[in-house]
Length: 247
Image (tube, rainbow, N blue to C red; front, side):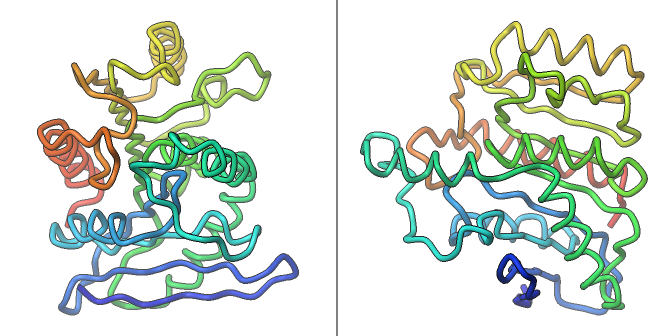
């Protein structure tokens, strides 16, 4: 797996990301991988590697670049430590979909000239916070995002006028939602609201429940990691990208 670091300077700081590529000349379809709340780290690099092994170029942005450098989190312990919980929630709440849309366009534009990848249209995948971001980017870039996988996402349904689910009519790509059945951030009511919104909008989508799984089940350094559920999610994600992006 080939890794290229990307840094783009702006008035707000330095937008940074990692681009992972298979060996060979390609061109490889592009997948944008949106991190969870704990930020870029080896566990997410390993997950990007699963996509690279399947024949995809993977762009993994640091969504916290506007807040500057931060000490690494230990995901299995963060939410049991009040101080660490406060720190991660502050970072999580600083991320805005409209900013990530701009970041995504800038980064994809930066790598688009690389002959080893195809970047005009791309897929996206996100976990936890990143699942919400992936869904949001899909609503805002309907001509670019052809496939979206949001894995144990939270915050897709709120009472706000601009709740993500209210923008389903904008989506043109295919959506996969992998929902843990023990996840208060995507409750039964939220699931029904998502089905109604996506169905009414004519979106091609799958909403799959993972019995016995908890929020964070697919990420290997989470305390709630579920190996069986994680493997099932990989099968679904790779099938989605294979059908919509090819290899």
